[in-house]
Length: 270
Image (cartoon, rainbow, N blue to C red):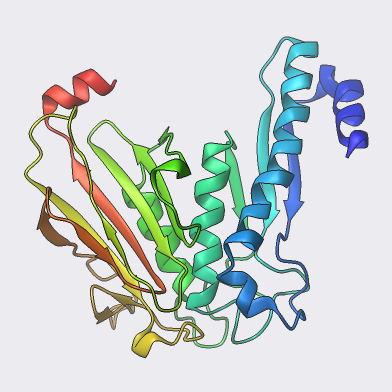
């Protein structure tokens, strides 16, 4: 994509944001779309495309003596409106968590999700007005994952089916974990050394009903998530667990984990 770098270099004096569209899994009509949503190889393709844009923005920054923001200004898993009963189901949430994590690591300032309503990748079902699973992913990510990105290298675990991202805020350090594997579980150990005395952690375990990843419903800690009768959001209560206990990450599940930092750790972190 040499033309991207050339375009950015020539436009740099007037350019503040470099935005691009990404539908990393291709067409919604792809017969392999379901398997791609749980494929480590397919999901990792996000990084290659995003790095091209990041490199172009970096070159622009050097030429224009200013920081150019990189935005994923339109993105979903599959183009052509996605696919009914696939991109509006729990399966799509594996892509969503993974792309949020990857783009944050790659210094993207904004991620514009296609679409809040409309098409078959919508976050709110346009017929029932009930949230699809990705709506709850977005809500939990916003509430739990802080603005600071913590670097985690894959050398610490052997399987590419285990996806791990970590963020930090002034009050917490948090993790988003996905198990893409159909049958294997992972035992996760957390090391909170260096962050003071942390006694417990909060776990938000997301899973599809009866293990059906093509369900439009989603469970939080084994309870069905849905709006209250008056249309308001329900309470999203975590499981509170001893911080030093290992966590079992079941097949085809997504978990947000939150450690609340003591004041001493906050001062050290920021």
